[in-house]
Image (cartoon, rainbow, N blue to C red; front, side, top):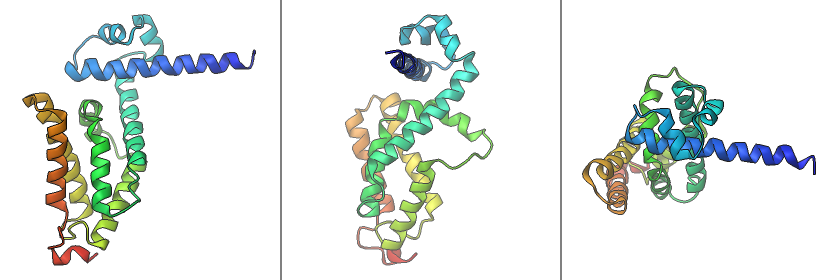
Length: 197
């Protein structure tokens, strides 16, 4: 019984931390200048509790950046990007990443200002996927892997903002995102250079 108590406490702390992070995504995603007391309210915790987990706004934003990377890596794992034709795998990945728009749009500006960090699992998996697609001919080899990666994120960003700023449905925006990626990066069996590495 005594051995279970720390585990229960640890699970409670983990749930509270995740509740705060999810609340921060919801609140700061709408208004980045919102007070942390509002984040605490949405998380269902006291302001003092939030401060025990995250001493200030910068600590919370740093945690959100890490949380976003973890969620992106989880999405990549769920997409099974190593399976099947590369274009299909890329579209599966985009479908999984689409649901992360709120947190990615919140923290991505900070990523651009950070020093070069260790590659994430997604960075490695995506580079491998794009290289494989160029070699097997399902992705247009006239584009570099770096171009394709940036195009994928740009297309996702367009889909996210189409929902946020233009009131489009998530269903329609996701469909447009996947169609855009397929038409812009896929070979469609017509590009002769698609199979060249």
